[in-house]
Every structure is written in C-alpha cells, then in structure tokens.
Length: 286
Length: 227
Image (cartoon, rainbow over all chains, first blue to last red):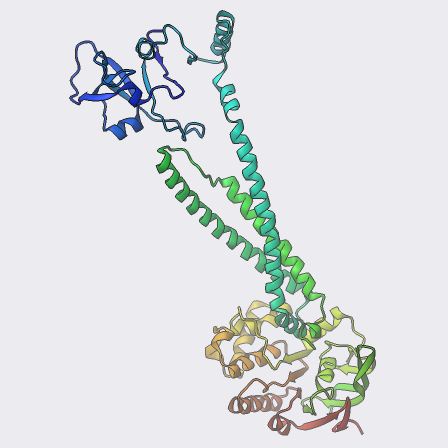
C-alpha cells in the first residue's frame, strides 16, 4: 500500500490552508530525495503554483517540521455533477505522508483499487469482502448508480417541466393558429366564392401551418443551442469545470422538430376545417 | 341572343329573430351573352342577395336560376364550388387578393385549382395582366399596388378560367373618382371584347356605362326586368 498513490478524500480532506501548503522555492531543481504531491489544478491556479514548485505540507500552519514536497502533477476535477459544487481543494500525497499529516495511524476509511478486467474485479471484490470484516467493496459502476440517484430525480423533474412546457406550447400554438386563420376569414370566403374547394384551402392552411411550425422549431433549436452555450460558458466558468450543464442533443432536436410540425399540422387542420364549414357569405359577415 | 342568365320568380327570405326578411320577392329577368347589366337600387333592396344567388354562393328559397344552361338553384355545395370555378368570375369591392402572393400568382390561383398545365397558366397570366395594363407589375405583392391596380389584378383573376359570366359587387366602391373612371373604362373594354357582366353598384357613372340597368326596390325589380 505504501507504493500506491492514496487518494486523499478527507471529506474536506486536505485543504491547502490546513495543510499549510506554502511555496518556498519555485525553482524546478530537486533535492536528491524528494517526495512529490499532486495538487488540485484550481489550487495551483489560485496560489500561482506550477509543476516543479516545492511546497511544505503540514497539518498546522507555520509548522517547523513541515515536509517539503515537489508539485509533480496537477489534478483536474472530473466533470461530475456531484463534485463541481465542492469548494475545497484536493491533493494526493503518498499514503505514509497522509498518515503523518492527519495522525490517523495505519488506517484508511476508503481506498480505490484499479482492476484489469471483469474477472479480476469480481475476484478482487470477493477477496476484499472476505478478508476485511467491516469493509464493503463496491464496483465503481454501482457507486456511480448510488450517487447519481439524486440526479435521476432531477432529470425526471426536468422532463416533467419539459412535458408541461410542450403541452402548454401546443395549446398556445393551437390558439394562435385559430386566431390567425380566423383573421383571414374574409380571404377564405373570397377563395370559396372564386371556386377554390374546401379541401384545397385546408391543404394550403395545413401546409402553411406545418412550414411555420418547422421554421419556428428550427428557430427554437438555434435559440436553445445559443442559450445552452451561454449557460455552459457561465457555469463552467463559475465552477471551473468542463461539465456540460445543459445539453441539446440530436435526439432533442429531432423530437422538438417532429413534435412541433405535428402540432402545427393538427392545429392548422383543426382551424381550417372549422373555417371552411362556415358558409362563405357568413364569413363575409352578410 | 342567347340568355346566359335566366332568373325566374326567385325568392329569398332571411330569418331575423322571430320574423323573416323578404330579401327577394319573385324576381325574374334574363341576361344575354355579351350583355352588361347594372343592378341598382337603395341599400337593402336585395341587390347583393341577387348577385350571390346568381354567383351560386347562396341558394334561393324558391324560383329557378339557370346560368350557362345549368340549373344552379339546387346544386350541392361541391357542385356549386366547381361551377363557380369555371363559369363565374367574381370581382369584390375590397379586392380580396391573397396578400402573400404576387399579382401573377393571384391571377394564376383559379387556374391552378382548375388544374390547367403550368405553361398554359403562365401564358394566360401574361395575357390577362397585359390586358388590364399590369404586365410590369406582375411580381408585385398586393401591398405594393394601388387600389386601382389591385382591382385590375382582381379582374384579371376573375377572368382567369374564361368564365361565362363576370359578377362584380361595387367594384368602384373602394376607389377614388379618377380610378373609378379607369375601372369603368376597363369594364367597357371587357364587355366590348365579349365578356358578359352583371354589376351591382351605387356608382351612377358605372350604371350609366352599362348597357342595361335593372332597378330594384324592396326585393323586387321595378324596371329593367322581364315584363
């Protein structure tokens, strides 16, 4: 275990302040025996650290016995919704250093083991679970499922909002089309008087409504993509992550366009049928 | 002379609340081929009702109505629509051009509905717009045309399928005096070239220009009809 990189997950594990991390030498020269540390890239950015810098780590500020280590890696935080809001910095140190730092002795709460395949993982889980009473080993996929349950709820909530929005938009579209077509009742009356058949009028209204709905959905998709990029740009900056906060997927685009065109056609058909059933002279107000 | 329009004892009532309004009371007259007839009279005398019946957009309560040898007083809505498309040209007071279509497309519309071949439609559009003096304005939309120009387009549209009869309801009603005179001149030229026209008008000059005047009052013809 001593040769493993221990992942320092102190909950609020290793705060730079608590560690007393301090730059004492930014020259890239190394002493003969030097220990290394991997720092949170955000910490490095905030404190102006770079690879090769030497820092002192200690559980107490201004500790004369603080150990000097060289920054050998910068850790970028994963684009994980469960992690982006965490404000604390993270660091990875060698296990013995970690034990000294936190005076925790030869104990760990959690550790991660990388396996080389499915069979190795299964046997490893069995070995750990049998060997260490009180420990429970989980495949990382199971842990991901457990930790993402909150996001599943959020996702369902977002989907419900989306469905409500679409239903409300459909009702709105229908009302608008009814009003717009009703505004053209005199034109429709004139067309009927000229001998244009009801089916031709319905077809042309449906075609027009379908085209308007398609153009509207395309405009909506373009607007959505722009807004999504703005939202991502803003929150990625705030949280210093590459996590995509909003997504406009091809499936979303296809679904939106198809649904919009379908609603447009149905609304157009309904409105046009309603109008052509009224006698032309009534439409003209006579 | 061949009678294009034969109207016999035509009556049309409208229910108004508990009573009925007798819009037409036994009207009879003929319109011969190539004739230009103006129907005149005070508002509410039944002029427009009569025009709507002749145009097969309304059905009489009694009487007989024959246009171009076809009885239209008992036609179904579908048959009446098809009849109007090929036999009747309508000119409205307010033009009713389709605002999204150009002048040429507006004229082409009835021909497209009649399923004329595209080349024939285009040739006919050029011919008609040239006839009404708007060859240069073919690709303008109605909003880009003056009132007189819009009415010319409407007349070209009404003539698109070579109808047996041109019906016009107050065609100068929305036009200024000078443009109205131009319209009267266009109607005169149309009639001279063989178009049978029935026009409902309050415009004395339009009525004077017509070959015959049918005077109506209270739903009946008081002069110009059958004896």
